[in-house]
Length: 195
Image 1 (tube, rainbow, N blue to C red):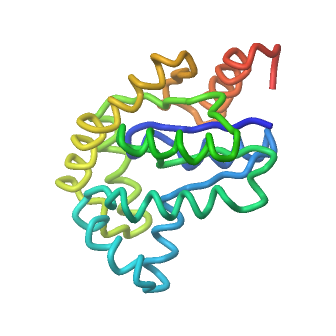
Image 2 (cartoon, rainbow, N blue to C red):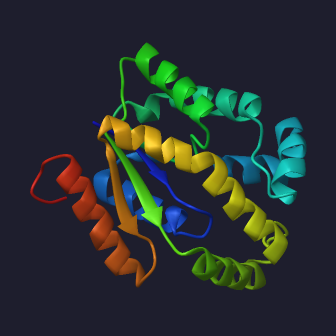
């Protein structure tokens, strides 16, 4: 059983690497972004509320996000491990996640941070916006999201670094090379030869 978190700025490749890690290690991937987008598309009450924040490039409030993650982590498919993508983003969410995991007698084993240069990320996200037509990816919103990441999420990274469970991998480069780096970093953190 392996419980992991992947963290990184918008556009750093978290979604792609999450899919690959989940597939290779057989752990359930839990993406708050995917859950939010499904609710927005379905125009659920949560989706309508979340859309206001997403369109402005802001984080969805902790009260909404915490409940969603708590409910998701109570499902039976996470018993053999999970990989969280997009949560926690604030130190308050770290504390809340600690409480959720402690109640289930679980803990995080590895926190993987994908790193990338801001200008490269802006370029990458603008390209993605053209391809997919995402309304939340214009340059002003992208830069705002990157600023929020640096302001709030870097404190989360620091907290996990203090616990000795953080590993960092450069998210820029060919996807297969990044995946190889990710798998090696996880293996090193878990003190196993290879994954």
